[in-house]
Each structure stands twice: as structure tokens, then as C-alpha cells.
Length: 404
Ligand code: SF4
Image (cartoon, helix red, strand yellow):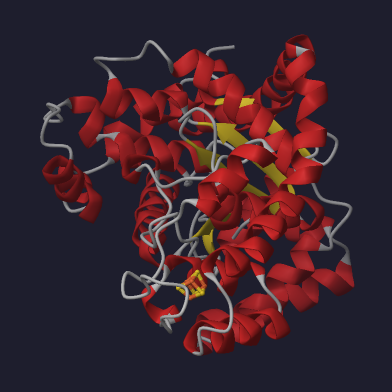
């Protein structure tokens, strides 16, 4: 199936929404920071995706892009470890999107759950557009253009990855059958050396004749470890293993990320549209003020009234930020009226400010030097483009569009 690079590659993106908040940090960025050390990561600003819903008001996209990239850097994404780039600067996304659109049945797009949901939710916008219907396919192109093996998603987004897998399968089925495929695969087997070739053949036989999944995995691992075959041969042999053609676009897998519930200042999920956010680079005074004026248990009117943490949004923040000792101090103090709300809020405010301190410090350098941010992105775009070009070369040649 997938080549070595695919198995190590992660692709993830974010729409440019301007300055990010702690919900983005806990829900996405913290995970990205971790992944950048474990995989070859491509993180992109999905500016074309922003246009699928905001085509009438694109004015602030550009500013939002830079603010968001500074937040990524502030959160700890390291340009030395991960590739950060802007989608529209890599036109290969659009080319692959177009080519995939030729083979994607309309029904696949219409049945994507978010298609109808979003149209319902964003009623004030006219989303009966070609671009909006096609956005899940643009997402597929975003992933497949890098032959990324892994895409970090929450459980509710697994169906998006499933569609990408179907599109890749269909593409490989239609175009992976180059003339003389079997002969080329046989020749590639020989090139691995006698011993490895024999092992490959027997594992393939075990899989094809007995459906032995373990044999398939072992054979894939065997191919991954081969140093002496070309990338093209490796892909042929991945495809040959399963009795199919060459794998041009490997099927990505969802990399399930645990859902991080970051409550907002009002206890609902933190979201810009609820106006309950704390910014990722917000200054300490403003954070203290926001926490100080936060709603608490409405039953606790006077300091002497006992309260119920379960009815208080501050308690939800304790659950994210406090250790066990602080949590039980808050629980007991609240229920017995032993502590006041201002007292109870203090450790939460302190913890948030402390969490953000390194982020604010990192951001400073980039805020003061916008040229530096632009050069990081320019470099990321170049690197991403090289990877995307390599895929498109194979894609064009498989379809029969390589004219040189
Ligand atoms: S003491 Fe703490 S948990 Fe209890 S109502 Fe006040 S802020 Fe909320």
C-alpha cells in the first residue's frame, strides 16, 4: 500500500480565522506540537477552504493568515521540525482537486454529513455553490497531494477520511494499471534479491490465497525496509501484494486524537462565535480581568452561601488546569462556603497565565519581525510544493497527461 514516506507523513490544516484562542490550543495545536517530533508534518493554512464559505467577504483572510501563523509559532510549532505553508501558494492542490473531480461521483459529495449541516447552520450565506459542494474533495486533494499516511482527526471527522480513501482507491483502480504492470512487478521482485523476493512471494501468496492479514502487514513492512528498490517499484509492489495495480495515491488513515473539551468563560465550548474566549497571546491583565468577572454558580449570591461547582464554569476550568489538591480545595471550599469565588478563581487565572507565558515570549520575536514569519512560510511553501510536484508528476503520467 503506502510508501515509506506516507507512513511517516502527517497532514493537517486550519482555516485562517485570525488570532487563535485556548480552545484551538488544547484542541489542535498541543497535539501538533507533539506530532512534529514523531512524524514528518505538513501543517497548512487552508485559505481556499475559507473562501468556500466566505467568498463574499474575503477581505480579512490575508491578515488572519499571518496572525494565525504567529499563533502556531507561539504554541511551539517549530519550522525546523514541521513544514508550515499556505494552501493557495501550492497550486498543485487545485490541479489534483480538478483531476479528482473527474472521477468523483456526485453522490459521494452530497452524502458528506457536514454538507447539509453547514448549509443549515450558515443559513445567512448562499452555500448552494459548486465550490462548497466540492470542499470535501478539496480536502481529499490536500491530503493526497502529499501522499500523507496520517491525518489527525476527532472521531466525528473519520467519515471525511473515509471519503478520501474511497477517492484514492478509485483513482488507483482507474489509473494504477500501467501497461505491462505484472511484468514490471515481477522484475521489481527480482531486484530485491533472491531471499527477500522469495519471502515477498510467499507472504503475497498467503494473503491472496488465505486472506492472511498478518502476512500482508509483514510484507508491507518488508517493502518499507527495502533500501535497494526505487519508489516506483515500491509502489508497484505494494499494489501487487493486494492483487491490484500500482498505488499512486496511498489511502490515508485517521490518526484519532482524544477530544479536548476546552470550556469557555461561560461554560459552553470555547468558540469565537459565543464570545467566550481567552486568546492564545492575550496579556496577563486581560486574562485576570476576564476570569475575575466570570459567571459563577448563580445560587451563590453571598460569600456565606455554599455553592455547587457542578453549576459553575470556573470549576470546568479547574478541571483543565488544576492538580488534585487544588481541585479538592475548590470543591470543599465551595460547598462549605469556606472560600470565596475570587479566591477560587485565582489558581485558574494563574495557571492560564503561566501556560501562556512561553507562548507570549515566543510570539514577541515574530510580532516584531513580520519578515521572519513571511520567510518561514515562503520556505515552507517551497518545501511543500516540491513534495506536491512529485505527486502530480506521477498522477499526470498515470492518467496520460505527461507531455514531455
Ligand atoms: S467557589 Fe469556585 S466553584 Fe464555587 S461558585 Fe465560586 S467560583 Fe464557582
